Amino acid sequence: MTAVEVYDLVTKGGGNDFARIVEVCEALGPYCLIGGLAVNHYVEPVYTVDADLVLVSGQWSRLPESLEAAGFRTESFEHSLNAQAPRSDLRIQFTTDPRYQDFLPRAEHGIVLGVETMVASLRDVTQGKIWAWSDPKRRFSKRKKDELDLVRLAEAHPELVKSFPPPLAAVLRQP
Image (cartoon, rainbow, N blue to C red; front, side):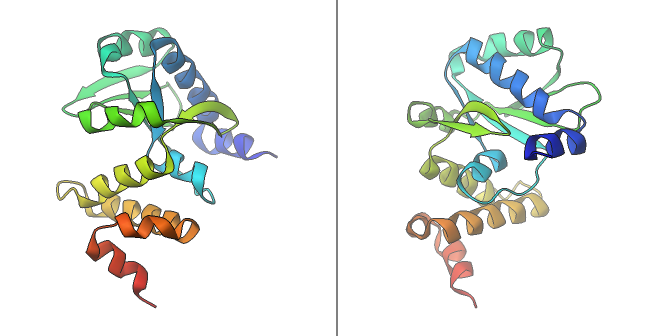
């Protein structure tokens, strides 16, 4: 059984849903994957039911209609548009945080869950995780997950540690 088949079983079709999300993004313009699935592109993957993306801001107004036409339910929040297919456990979140727009020109081609997609660069994925880890409004458990993602990235790419905030870099120096 392939990793995508396992992912589909666990998320009730999330791999196929991810492929449909990529198709929607490809039709709308520049986009890239950020967050946990992007981390998985650069290091040994761990299981996540979230797909976090950024789309070029000029297409934000078209995104809800495009997602709904592809069979996804959407819900808008202050800093994101969330989407989910019926009966699927895959949770899709498009950030509207303008800081992520700078990631788009540096995005790289990659294969995630067997799908060709655009992935934020390693440095940009790291920066996004640092922003998430540093956000005092995020739930503690989410910040710890972000910290673990950063540790995983640092173990595979030690040169990244110099970009970490001192308290996070100190975690990596602990035995």
